[in-house]
Image (cartoon, rainbow over all chains, first blue to last red; front, side, top):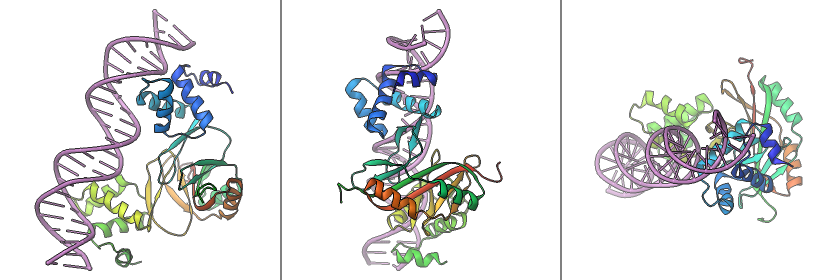
Length: 132
Length: 132
DNA sequence: CTGACTGCAAACGTTTTGCACGGTA
DNA sequence: TACCGTGCAAAACGTTTGCAGTCAG
């Protein structure tokens, strides 16, 4: 996938730092701010946290990036893909995407609440196969 | 329900401030720290945020209180009830509980991830009937 | 009476802001 | 060239801690 094009589409200038953030998110899937900072420092020893925060927010605003809030953990960020749920290991904090069918759940919730729903966030917590 | 008994069960001293926190959570359902602080100041003009934070953590530790992390919003706290999902209005921030059946979702996620799951957090975002 | 709780103030970690400089388009 | 983005330092913010005084058990 071509990140330069994605950034341009959203009218964001293609800077090396910004490109690197997107690439790291692509290759790692989910990263919190600290992880991102540590990874980026390898390529850009002088990069600042401010730059990372500013870029994360710029991309959240353009909604091709999303924040995943996890019980008892720091938020992680990921590039927007198809709708999916997250599974996190309470021991090693590994996060895995799972594609589960939430349509019946959504219908159920819609009828009970009489809300018009448009988003669903599902986070499972458990113990991964390596940790058990 | 008798909150004095609940607090004693969990070996927490029954102070007026602590009781008030639990009562506010019971009557409002979900509250964030700021809301709680504003409500409690009416009864206890000198109450400090530190007291609220300390109590919230004491009760989270004893797991009769839970934290609900909501996309784009501050966390809210609620007394533990049966497993349920949350629906939040993106316009007025109202939060409603919905009792939906997540067992098939959980099975699905368990088989895909090969995790041993024990918790599930589901938050729907939409527009409530008043706001649309 | 003893340990736990409160409220204040200070400390802390994280996130945001202002600004001068540099780079993209 | 004009504007957006970067990096630094400072500020702001939410949360936590230490401590002396107070209260519940």
